[in-house]
Length: 419
Image (cartoon, rainbow, N blue to C red; front, side, top):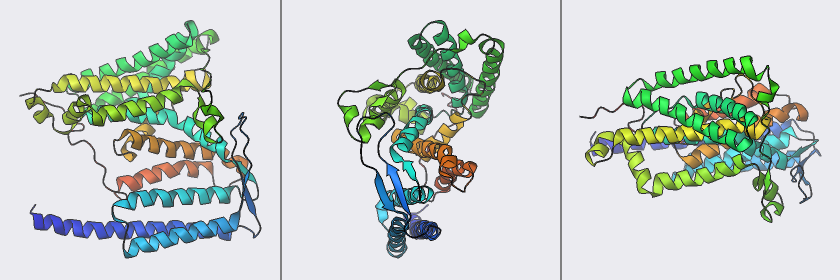
């Protein structure tokens, strides 16, 4: 493609995206106005700002429901109009996040109109529910940045959850956690062996692992765990309160009074981001996922790098699987992960194959899950299933390119033949 043709193509795409985003902002503003129209004047919404069990008591936040909705709608319409006329340029995605955040807040104001909603509790539940999704997304980032598609995250999580429960019941929580992580690593090794060494189609390899994990865990659960409850009672890791930091009003109880899985998620998130983008190790791993032949020419062992990435991804998925049993319910049931591994893949794509992007997507999915759980309590006249659809709709919008094309690794899913 010539430079002139490329410039013409960009000139066509940028205005189209600017107009599409402007229309989207306007639609969100109109939706907020419609929400305000269904509320009686004088109705107030009360938000609680103190998480359950917290000693840092904050006063409740009382808002006029119609006025707040009208204000947010007006701001969204103004932003949409500016986007249509001139556009925000490189800031468009950030403006999208702001407008989407305002609409979500508008929805909460409408949902809790005339009653109260513990906002701190909702955010705390969002963070907790995002843990396995974020960890699963990081597992996918590790694998796919090296050029290996990993749809086996679901199977890795499921197998690790079962192993953690069984070993934890026979020994203790820490040994159970270690074995759960190692089980995920072994599943990763199997995936690498099939897809890297034998060049099996990576989708087929991942599907085989998922089917194997579902069948094996279901058999062991029915044969042993359900019949002998002593084998299905490992307990759970209790929250660890960080002194001083946990006393910070509002944020303290949310961030600094959690179990080790939440802290582990943040530590892995930072380490993975630094490792991928600020170290020689990360540069080599990403080069294998972008152009394996060029990496091989420079002396990088493509096979070994991909093996390492997939095994590390399996270890992270194993940690995510252990969360379901050792960090949440304290027992194993058939199909416990309930498709969270596949949702993690959507979060990874939503996050543009970036660790912090996956975390943001995980928070969105977690928020939808937490809000759906409270829909019945608030009396929202919307079925909870529709609330659970929202992150998937947002993912389709992203995949359709409304917020920019995803930058997947160029060699993702392509087996490498060494010449």
